[in-house]
Length: 79
Image (cartoon, rainbow, N blue to C red; front, side):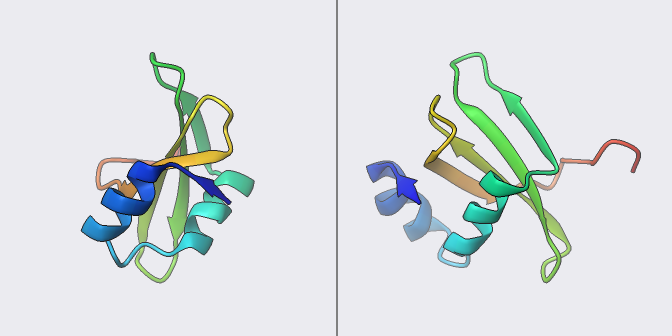
């Protein structure tokens, strides 16, 4: 998995509970995906052991992880 320096130095430091495999899962099998106005891409995945959704933000290439956090406001369509 490719990552930005921000992800390595800031995101993982501030959120040490985030597992890289969760981020990889979000990129491979997102429950939802959308493009931000700046071109970055948001990917959401349900983390069953937490019962919450993780939002993973990638650069425009949809492969380089820039940020990740638990998204308390995300609701899957139909929920």
